[in-house]
Image 1 (cartoon, rainbow, N blue to C red):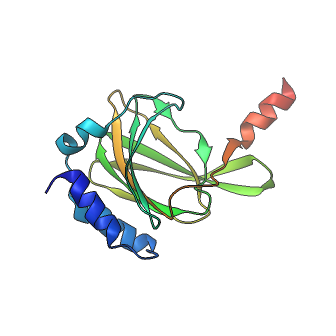
Image 2 (cartoon, rainbow, N blue to C red; image 1 turned 30 degrees about the vertical axis):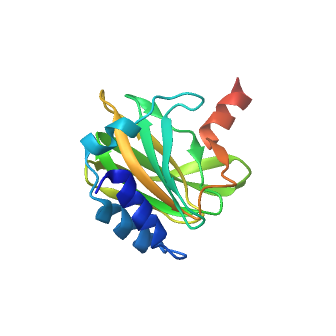
Length: 165
C-alpha cells in the first residue's frame, strides 16, 4: 500500500485520539525517506517546508522539512495536540514556558532527536524545532484536531535586548 493510502486509512480510524494513539498511528505508517521524498517541500512563506498529506475532521498529517541550520519560530499548536517522528536528519526540540509575560517565553528544556525517534507535543506546549546539522531534517507530524489557532512567541532574551538597545 502506498504512503498516502496508509495515511488515509490511519486517519479514518481515529476518533478523538490521545497523544499516545497519535504516536502509535505514526509508527504504524512505517514511512521511509524514499516514500516521503515526493512530499518534501522547500520553504516558501515559512522558514521550513510544510506539506499536509492527509486531513480529516479528527486529525491531519504533515511532512515538515527544516533546511540545514534553520529553525521554526517559537510556537504552540493552538487547540491541537500531536507528535512527530524524525524521518531524516537531526531535530533539536526546545520546550519553552510562559511566565505570564505575553509573548515572552523562557526555554526550559531541550532534546536532540535522530532518525526514528518520536517527540510529543501535548496540548498547550510551546516549542521550537531546529535543524542544527549541515543536512536537511524531515519529520512526519500528526495533530488532532487539525491545527488552528496557533500562536507564535519570542524568547524573553529578545525583549531584554530590544530594551537595552
